[in-house]
Amino acid sequence: MGKIYNLFSTQEPSPTTHSLESATALLPLVRRYTTEAAKKTEALSLQLQYLTKDSQEYKRVCKEYDDIVVGWAERVHRVGGLAKGLWLVDFDTGRGYLCWSYPEKEIEYFHSYDGSYKTRKKLGTSKTNSRGKPATAREAEFHPPQ
View 1 (cartoon, rainbow, N blue to C red):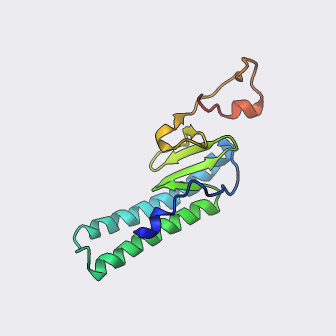
View 2 (cartoon, one colour):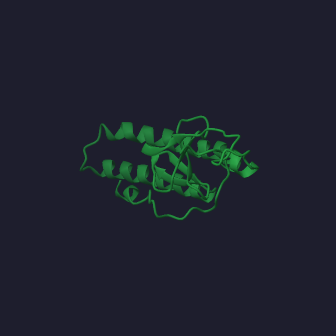
View 3 (cartoon, rainbow, N blue to C red):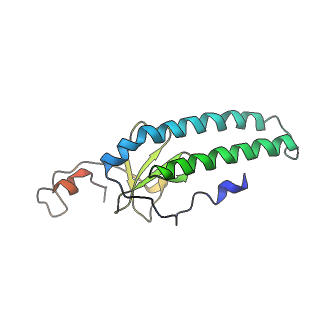
């Protein structure tokens, strides 16, 4: 499973920037890709439990597992997301990342560019901007927690 360790780079450029609306529109596709890959790798993980680590069959199953995860990450990237961990997808907003993790139903979290899954915060809506004035449409779109 060595190929996977370098897959989730924090230096990888995002293919595009997203609003909450555009990321949410992509989520059914990302969720489908993720569900398919998670089910396949779960079955392979069960097989690995019964194999000897030095066996050819163990190595074959590990390679198949790696190929599924790498394929999943590439598919996510092609549609505009960033695979940041196993079944974890970020969508670049230009101000940070909207964050989704399988099997969550919706995109409900945000973290800064310096943050991660562990530091993500629940999205909240705001009718005012940081100056207490009525929010513009762009500011009200989503309000990353401070």
